[in-house]
Amino acid sequence: MDADREWEIWRAWLGGQPKGETIYAQVVEMLAFRQIWDGCAIVHEAAPAEVKSNATFLLWVRWNYARAQGLAIRRQTDPRSDVISLAHLIDRVWRYPTIMSRERFRALQPDDDFPLIDQWFDELAGPGGRYIDPRIPAHDFEQLQATTAKVRK
Image 1 (cartoon, rainbow, N blue to C red):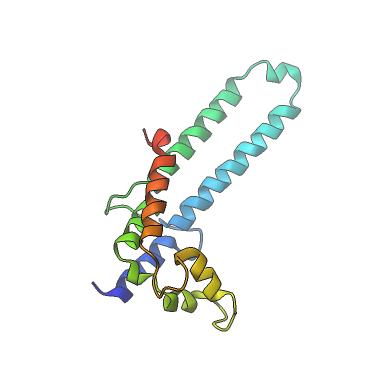
Image 2: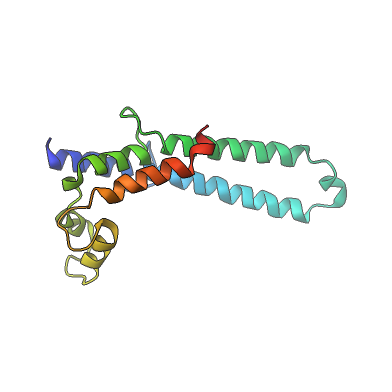
């Protein structure tokens, strides 16, 4: 396996901006839908009693929000190799832990001399190592699958 090529694939999956078929774009979309839902709840609370008595519109909005978020969660927790998802990325990090190195992490930071870079890497990847401890993404993968099992079903 070409480590540099794999690293670039991971970075492309994550995305640098919230656009395209990237994990970043899909998470931003989920957050935007949440803001819309929160806005609808505020409008509904301020609505006159006559409007509140007919819940058809609110039920329709609630259904669409729940459906959109459920599909987004299912998409991000899909570990198949033919999709770009958080689960697929975590699975790859677990399988190929030497790709996620302290050196690559440092290179992502705007200031390589910033003293907290190594501390951040240790918090994410395990203390003192050159690479991520594969047990960390393996645990993250299991936790992601367990906490979303009901939604995926």
